[in-house]
Image 1 (spheres, one colour):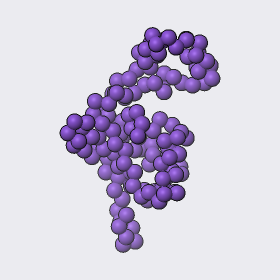
Image 2 (cartoon, one colour):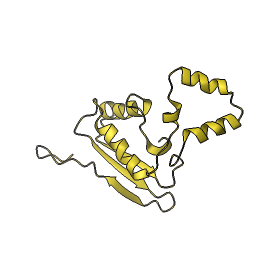
Image 3 (cartoon, one colour):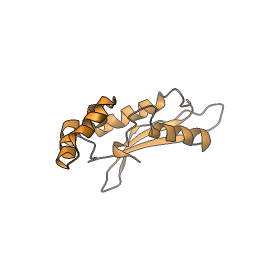
Length: 133
């Protein structure tokens, strides 16, 4: 679980956790589940950093991060459409060079009040060699 159900970097901790689950815990299916009314929807770095500033975090800390090569504008930007975001995240996981082709990767969006799940990406794989996956 993380903000926005996003995998923001192919070499970050979320992707590492997924790969560990696949190779060490023998996970065969991954589900990316975002939710409607997500706080990451419409998140903009400029407004976020203004709130940081308003909370008395010194501006030199922001500059230190920028000077260290951290792209805060990208890192602190959310998405406009939750379904598109889910598709993007599923695709990033699917295309990771260490992710095996035989792992089903699904994308869903849940309604936070009703709990209704909408399937956005059906990551089911066809049976191979007469076995169900």
